[in-house]
Length: 388
Ligand SMILES: *[C@@H]1O[C@H](CO)[C@@H](O)[C@H](O)[C@H]1NC(C)=O
Ligand SMILES: *[C@@H]1O[C@H](CO)[C@@H](O)[C@H](O)[C@H]1NC(C)=O
Ligand SMILES: [Zn+2]
Image (cartoon, rainbow, N blue to C red; front, side):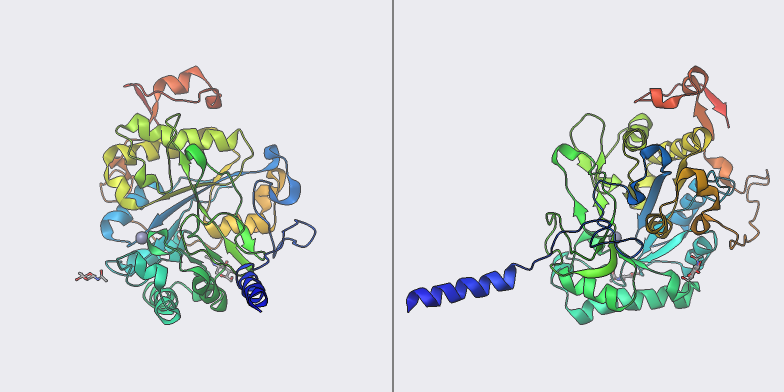
């Protein structure tokens, strides 16, 4: 009798917990454009040399006047991808303190507006335990608030990131799917010794197949729903990584530049898996971080014709339709014909639209010594600069 009872319990337990996710086989039980297993292999079986190196910047929290100015400097007019379209980023917008006029302006410049909750409340356990109704308010209401106040069509707001990267398990993914979101970017991949996992995003057709770094991860399957996990940045040889760039604390501009450069170098010379820089704009209040990022943009835009700064949406569009570099100029989702520029005020009266406050000079030695910057795994700055 007892033994049956125990067996029954074991079976129930097994049934309840052993949700069979199944194994994802690309081009077998999972096919693009609606299903992608993710992981280390590139979509479309492209060779690294055929893959545009995609770099995605994402910025979280409120869009305020001060922060908008930083975006204006970094993504200033005239900074173009090799296809002639503006470099773009994704901002996950929370409600408090956000100026929606500025959100509207970012959207009109081609940036992606995604959702990051109404209240962004503490403690983080709120998000861990959030009920369906609570989370519905945070996700769906914030999308409506953005749509109404910034004039961004609901159909163009397709991404969500939970505050503090604290997942809410299956409730979160159920809600996102029910409400027509295309992707989540909350789950994190922790790696040993802080190496970048260098993984491609995946659809959730076979669930979340990796270890759960921050509980609770979803157990269920969400066909067609994308997960764009937050991946660690490597910090040189120090053996520490960081999920948000903010938690790497470079002390100087050189160190901050290395953070961008080392990660770019490793991706570009490796598999060309997508490179994500995840941060809070407040990190850029440190002048040396802002300068380093500005140099990074200038360096990449100057030297590379196969590197693209795109939004998460544009990145997913490429995975769905993996287009080799030889055809990339014709790739429609990266075109920008729809962008209508609003006239900008010439704030400092010298034709630079207020951009001149940030130095546009290159590391001099770097520029004269080599037309092959990849030769350098580290780039040292010199006091001399060439104006760009
Ligand atoms: C939103 O900002 C106001 C100040 O403008 C503050 O009083 C309030 O507590 C904030 N709400 C949340 C949820 O942080
Ligand atoms: C907005 O969404 C529509 C429909 O998905 C799409 O055709 C359009 O290109 C999107 N606009 C932007 C600016 O992303
Ligand atoms: Zn946040």
